[in-house]
Each structure stands twice: as C-alpha cells, then as structure tokens.
Image 1 (cartoon, rainbow, N blue to C red):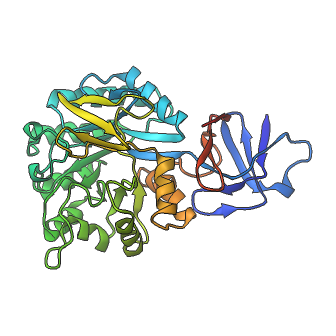
Image 2 (image 1 turned 180 degrees about the horizontal axis):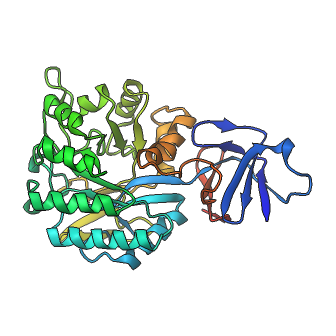
Image 3 (image 1 turned 90 degrees about the horizontal axis):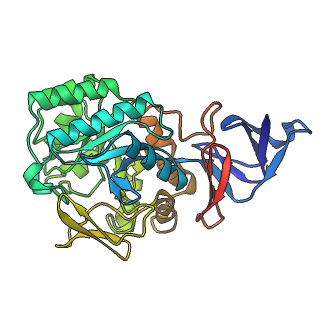
Length: 377
C-alpha cells in the first residue's frame, strides 16, 4: 500500500522541492511528485522542516563501544550498520585502520559475509592502512605501518572483486604507481592519505588511478608556497576528498577556503570511533587509551584519534560555521559519497530504501526514518 509524506521541503540529493510529495510503498521510495498530483484517497503524513535521504558515510571506524578490528564478524557488522542507520546514516563503509595482515583478512571475510547476507546499510569496506607514511601516522600504530607487498596487493584485489565496494587509503610512498593501477583496475577506490608526499608524487598516484583523498588537510602534506603537497593536489585536480567537519580537525575558515577552491568533489565523513552511539569516555586502540573530552578524541599525548562526530552535526558545522549553502552541505553528506561508490543511496529515487532524515529549520536533526518508520532524535 502506498502513502505520502507532504508538508515538508524535500531534498532529492541535489536540490530542494516545495509543494512536493514523497510517495512510499512499504519500506521503499515509490516516487517524488507534486502534491497536487496525489490521488485524493492516498493516505498522507504531514511533516515540517526538510526531509532528505539518509546520510552516506565512507569512513566509520566503529560505534556502540566497538571498533572494526581483528575480532570483527558478520554479527558485529550487522550491529554496526543498524546503529548508524538509527543515527540517520543509510549506508556506511566500516573502516579498519592500520592493523596486522591477519586482522585485515578477518575483516575482509566478515565484509564478504555481510555482502552475501545483504545486511541493510552495508556498502562495503574501507581499509585505512597499513600502507601509509609513518611521518603522517596520526593515531595509527607506527609499528604496524609497512609498504605494500605482492601478497598484500593480491589480497586487496581479491577483496575488491568480492565486495560491493572497497576503499583503500594508502600513501604513495608505500605503494608504487603500478600497484595503485592494479588496485584501481580490480575495482578498488584508491584514496591517498596519511602521506607526506610531494605534489608531483600525488599527481603521479592520481594518474595511476587514485580517485580520492582521505580526510583533507589531516595527516597529509600541507600547501606551501613552493610545494603544494597532497592538500594542494586535491584542490587543483579532480581528486575527490572527504572532510571531517567537526570544527576541530579543520578550522571552519579553512573549510570555507576549500569549498571555494573546489566547487565539486568534497564530501563529508565522520571518521567516528566506537564512541558513536555510546556514553563511553575512553577506549583502547591497539593497546593505547583514546580519551573523549569536550567533543574531541585524543590519544594520551594529545594526538587526534578519529572524531566524536555525527553526520548531522557535520552538516550543521558546514552551514553555520563554514557558510556552505544548505543544498551543497546536504549533498556532501548524501549523494556525493553515494555516487563515489555508484550506490543509489543518497537520493530520493524509486526503489531505494525509505531511510530518511528530517531537519528542523535550524538544521538540527529532528527525526530519523528507517524503512518507512519514523523515530524522533
């Protein structure tokens, strides 16, 4: 049976619609049409504010007090996706940060099982490391960072072919252009990050097949007057890039500069840790304490260790602090990351799950819809 949502401004993934209706059929979107064209006998739910597709997050390290790690299995991935759907994120890439070959193999096996089980919200995996540059390690364990071997490359290519999507963050210092080209040829989304590379090295990696950069400005070579670095390569090419818009990882003024310099290709990530959906104030990461204090996650030495961030908060920061137009901010958390994975999420399209979010007029999150059922936040 069909029903319609009316009365709200609708965002379709690219632009706003007034006087429109979103028609649902069970747990799926059926159509986006003018309200005046609805059949008079169709049941209607009148809502206010702005209704938009659920978020898409390509960098999710954990949630509910658990991290993606060497103990990850199908049940954990199912729970992680369910948690983030309850927070308004319709699809995620569970993300393993630098770990052992055994842990990587375990997470890949769990991801393949999740894909076969068609776990709602599971879009694939993101392997952030271990092929990084220790000079830009961030919170990654330097003892586990290493160059890519032939065995690593084979494992990653096999995973890329078996998963719905595989994103691999690597530093071009730790992988050759031929390895990057082979990965991209196998279908992996190669992302440059945790790198101190030169601009020219970044450009060479991009030409080899890298399409993305991981958390722009963080853990990467910065823009200098004579050496633009990886950050400069992102802002002067068609490399897409995730950004952590929590007001901590990147200053709002710097976000504004990036938005002006790069009209297309920027998208939001939360880089959230096990703290998401949990009241915990600390956790262990490869044996090291991560502390949660005043919206900031750090190791004991003060190094940032992921983000204490939800996607709705990132959108608020973009709109209110970085002065981003609302339609662009929403697209950065919905359709742009979905398009990178060639996913149909992030848009109000016929046949996609009715996983939606409702914003108040001040862009705070008011409610979340999972499979057609609304819950207030």
